[in-house]
Length: 246
Image 1 (cartoon, one colour):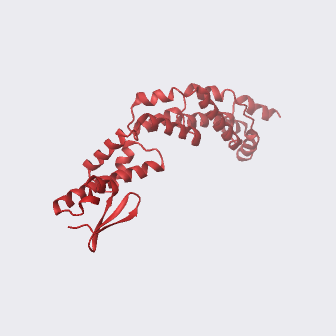
Image 2 (tube, helix red, strand yellow):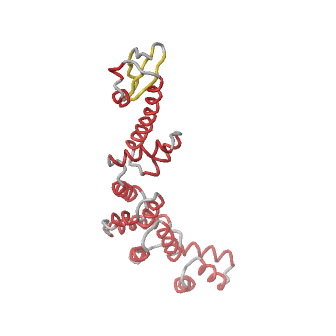
Image 3 (cartoon, rainbow, N blue to C red):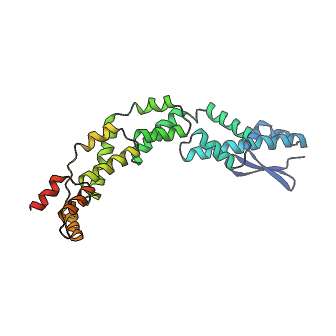
């Protein structure tokens, strides 16, 4: 088969023409097999070239995927599988990326952690769990998390609590604290750190006034039922009793 011409069709890609027909090959393949010089190939060589081209197709697909954002190994494997590349081809591409330091685990851990700190409410334990799910080494995760000062997490906690406090003025102090403890723990923050932040807040709410009036109407001034209702909402006995006195 005689090569009649080369036509550039994209980044690193050329259409190699054999008369009226042709195949699209990566520049790497063209150079590797000296197609610019030999000008003619047989069927066996063509099959070999096509197989080699599949590798570069997978390789450049992975590179383009990485360019969008930092990726981890498992994510790239999944991406290439969806494109129907064979397992052996994917393994070869992964080896190549690792040799070029494009799949550096520690770099990904630091980049992912910093993103979650700046762009989410996630705490250290939630970040660590996600990275473990991505199959990163626990010691590498801990190594980077240990470089982050507790002040960073305290600041994040304060911001979350302050925002929630403004949204929960209609709740009792007890209910607010209970919900915050649960929410913050689920977000992956340390219990002692949560307790420290919540112990310093000043929670001013007029919720008891509204709940007291509602209970009075509902239970027709039955003191015991009103007290029971307000206790269930998280108010303490002293503040409930002060409303009866007033």
